[in-house]
Image (cartoon, helix red, strand yellow):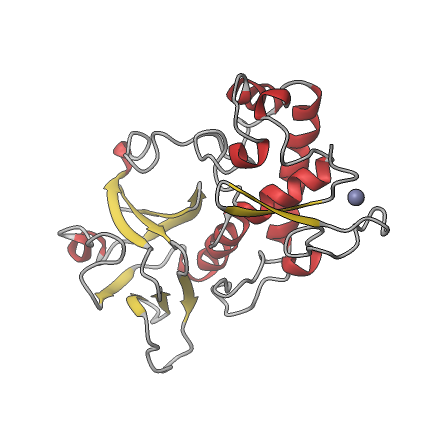
Length: 274
Ligand SMILES: [Zn+2]
């Protein structure tokens, strides 16, 4: 599933080809992804100029010059790729954007957990997709004090808490594991023990891991591709994720362990994460 760095990478790749262009055509090749496309979607965006593409949580937002915002989510398996001129449609190319300079961006989503909708820009902050979300880990509203306040009294593990979008958005399974390793914090530790000194270590660790992942174009699992078609490379920099039984890079005599928390795999070093 794409996490924050992968979605950020998609936004940056789309911005290069779409910002400043008009949407000449929007082809919906089915009626829905996870939910039906809203009525009036094609009429709302056709002819509009794309002013800016940016990320909110794990959503791709396109600000249009008609005061509407197009909202896309990649779901489990979605990708948005700039098609080569004349390239045949692929299976699962469900939505096609064509711009006034004939750039074609295809939203391909085999498992169809993705989403495409729109809203007036004035209603974005109160939109049901966004109003319950916590701070963005790369934004100014995320700092050790805010994280400490959100974790106070929480009985769940810190690993599970980091996946809670009300606490912080976009940090999925991979980056939660990597951030906790970097901060030297056990994923099994109760979230309520993090406020204070551990939060002071964890916040910069989360930011650093996410920024490095973005700089590498994200992590390529089965589905993630940048809009250019290039793969991300951050999977080569994983310290713990997907490395059970392999030596810890800080002290090779200890093996990385895998446990299951909240139904998800967690990878960590039992020696340097306490
Ligand atoms: Zn270790």
